Length: 381
Image (cartoon, rainbow, N blue to C red; front, side, top):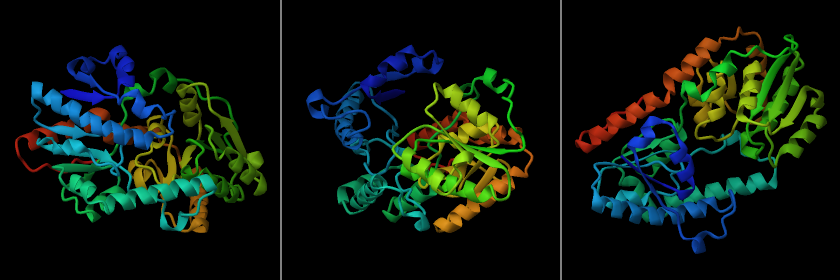
């Protein structure tokens, strides 16, 4: 197996102690500096990816001149908006899992800020352009098999005439991802009478932490409850102001960015539930990590998070308009507070369905079938 990736991943890869890393031939490529001098952090990432794609095709072709490939699989960046030019290399080609077809539920399109509105508009323009640019549509249709991260993206691809597409989650987890010592730590002392929710996401508009705060304001009329908000982001001040304006600021604690990932895990594990009402997310790693920590999840029955949980591991709220969604989230909080927590069911869901080795095994089966010119099966999520 050969993998082409960015040069900035080299140190991490070479320092890895995972045995499988040594069985892979790693090839590195980045565009010349004069083409990408303007990129700073996350700024310009989309344009950088387009430029990177043009070069990676040449890198792959040169590699195949030295040693041919049976199957080509493009899975970088996770959006279908920029189809892969690797489909033109004349070998069986798999694309994905890709997202990008996830949009806010119809009743929740209003954003909390100008920044959020601009982001949503840019995304809508990108998806419109792909559907109206014939070369992009032809590339998408040429894949032997396309994996969509969510049902929304599957529908978007089918509308473009992509013939062979099915849903496959974008991410997974292994037992070693959560330190075993952390799982055996005693829980910190707290008032067990108060139902504790935790939110663990960047504070940006489409993570919709504002919905969680407004739902809490209704739930506290029925049960004692509080919300711990982790992380930071451009919406933090708006969220603090919202909590104060609706009178729940004493029930909401903003902890900001914690020192390390294990500290985040401790907060999630010690909470009664993770609340994650993201409006459009291709996966929802925080939801999966919460299950692995034995913590149930409240989310929207929409996009990635709605695929992760089941009835035994949380409550997926059907989104409606803003008022309806907040009311349903509040009802879910009250309902969850009366349930007996079942960490074993949460962990069984995480590792039984989203274990990395199981997901990798499904992909290997597809590689073999496509290389043998057989019709691929539909991997099970």
